[in-house]
Image 1 (tube, rainbow over the protein chains, first blue to last red):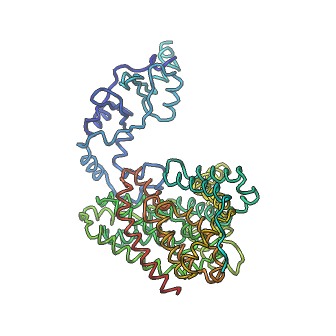
Image 2 (image 1 turned 90 degrees about the horizontal axis):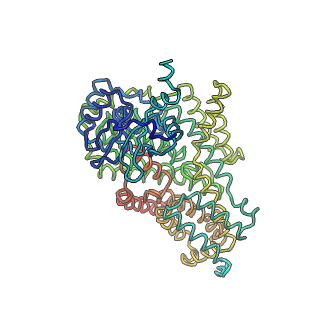
Image 3 (image 1 turned 30 degrees about the vertical axis):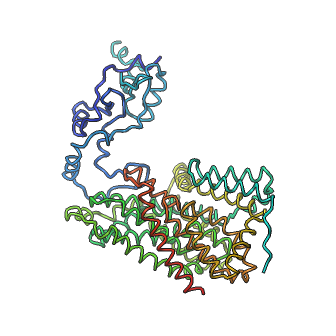
Length: 156
Length: 440
């Protein structure tokens, strides 16, 4: 069984030239965990998701490794958080893309996609092997539905 | 006066291995611990050093002191005490960026004097980055000044910086002797360096009142993540420092004391936990040990042991004594400057490990162990402060650069070096004056 068999074709995506505000709206309106980001030639460059969006609102050092035990000493209220987002929303998405995101090819075995889903808790982009063009995504709902056979269970 | 040993063919291959290994370390193309382990192992495999001699070349007191203090740091980190101190220091300066630059440097220098500086910066830098973000000021000047402060503060004591740990262990120097001999120089260098950094950056830093209000509104007490651990941490670190002060009468090596203190702090941390939780906590504390540095030390100890066995370092020492005409003052000053420049260019740990047998070798021709004390102090000042000169000069520098990079703050090598190297030279000029004034 390969990734091709369960991937969602023509998925929603954003472009790296879009703004953070545009991507945030897509994420919130569509309740996405993460969205693939492509360049001007539709090549996959990374992911931008709800956790990347929220991480923009706190100092970056607080979300890498285990360097700060907590951020409870900060006095930011929700208004200040909104102000922070407003100051960022017109910035290019380019600077906030997770470029380390894992990707698979259409013929990658499904078990590998499941391993990546378990590790990263994000959607897995499916790209062409030669040019990295985005052709689909695998979400954990699709993987689970396929394996558990939820549709069949519901019908029975 | 001893006769200078002649250089001969038996020195060639160990010396070649030594030069190649140090060359690869400088290029940073391979992890330095891997290079050191391979070079050390090769020295034994090729018969430059017998296995028992290789074991004897490893200074286990130094390793124990480093591992002990690193474990202490690992447990202390969980308490959040240093975050509290850094925030209070910023608030004491009324959130003025220039004041915070000085205050955080002072905190870094003070903590670095009693804990390894590479790990001290791990406490201070994250909070510094949060403070700079809240103030909306560039974090680079703060990070730069904290690197300098950690290396300067670490110079003051036996346990503050790896070169001092090495020198103290090899020469049998005590915590008190380090503090009394180097403390005044460290204070002078810190004051001058802080003034220069204020002139370069501090006086230009401005923050809007609303951003300063963010800092004043911080709840410093909330930075403390584990209230129960704080008194234990402070008490055990204080007890360790006191024990080091009295290490002479106690007839205990600093490494033993540090491991004992680490064990006590682990016990304090584990006391309220269940068996599985204890295992996780101990594993987490041991993960804080910088094993790259530890294995780097082990490999370099063996490699230098092999080179020393050939008589090459005695030969170089004799050449040095001939160059300075057996004058202790001139020898000390040569090692101050050579230690500083080489530490900036390579890394202060291998430089000091190499210099130690060299100084021990020339001691008899310069009047014995007591006569060469100023040389040890000059070497410590040169190696510790020389580490400030470039971004690869000491472990603390690389730690700060690494955290900064991961936090999205660029710290290019050339940008650091062009300010740091002249500032390092200034500190060595001050030390030159101090060494001449104080010891001769």
